Image 1 (cartoon, rainbow, N blue to C red):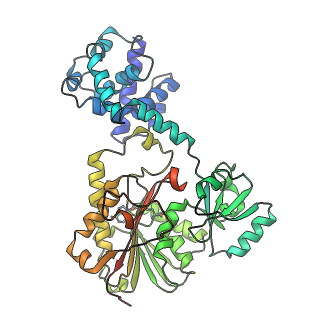
Image 2 (image 1 turned 180 degrees about the vertical axis):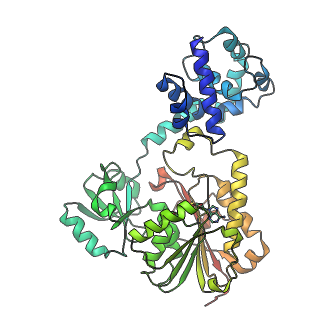
Image 3 (image 1 turned 90 degrees about the vertical axis):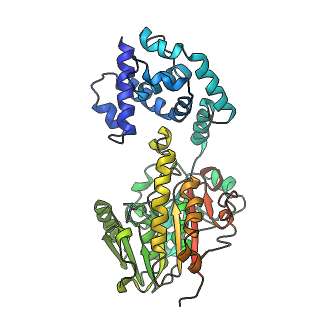
Length: 439
Ligand SMILES: C[S@@+](CC[C@H](N)C(=O)[O-])C[C@H]1O[C@@H](n2cnc3c(N)ncnc32)[C@H](O)[C@@H]1O
């Protein structure tokens, strides 16, 4: 039956995507199945609701569906069939064999889904989260590149180009004021220095000459927090352990007024090449961008002895970034993956804290998962060397009311960012400070 062929093809796309062999789009357009539109829609939809289906398949009775001869062990095919049953247009157009796999257990499937829903983990919750996400409009943040011009020059030029400068947005009713801004208005950010706020939907803003020539650097506000909170003095040395593509390196260099040095390391050679271009185009003169594995770097090497500041922005699930496809597919939230990331993140942070002359380090992720955030801080603070030498800085940016999760002791000392609350991507920052003054 034609619909069976579609379901089998969607299952194959899902398999490819979850095995990280291809993106959804590449898998769909590489498929021989003719109706690409149907293929794409059903693949994305089934992936989107997959977390619910996975939970349903934990049920003792429903687990057995995978072994049904019509399913042939393919959990991906079950995702499609469950999608059609619980969300889509039903299974009336497919063969009796496929339909019967579900229809024989439909009552139990609905029961389990209802239980999940009462816990906020059912189909309805995913639909609601998606609707809420559609409604969130994050403004565009642009950092004045003070390595190219001063803030005054920037403001004057923007005014000459007929932008309407509104002054500083108030921190108290930030979301309300910024949420209503018009396309030709600009606010000054009340938290991060030299950061401007533009409306969310300005057409082709990345082609605007100030952006193209890197007089303004498009950078989400939350991602400006690490270098801003690190606040390295001009003339000092910074180590950025996972630096590419160099957004935080370039921000640190601007704060240091191009005086001192930033060691900008990254493991991925292609990303280091991109970073070099970006730093060059931004007039960063003090960065030494190089390729290497930070975990294999001897931080006690004499050449790093003057490093007083560290940026630790390790790989993360990226779950805080609004509107990413892998968020929609739910592919990033797997416990096992988060556990692996947490271990890597903690290792990288602990290693950075071994820099002998280090005074302050900032840890950040663009993840919303506590495993990658508060749990990493907890884990690192269990280390004897870390406990003897560092404290988690208290009262970081006190006017920033969105703090780490209160279920952790460290929570109140950390900053969180959230699209709904701070009008930024989801983000997490914590600052470590050496207990003894090493000056
Ligand atoms: C979140 S991104 C960094 C973004 C960057 N800080 C910025 O602001 O533009 C994480 C980076 O860590 C790099 N990375 C992963 N493992 C690493 C390691 N062991 N040593 C150095 N870099 C690593 C990845 O290649 C990736 O570029």
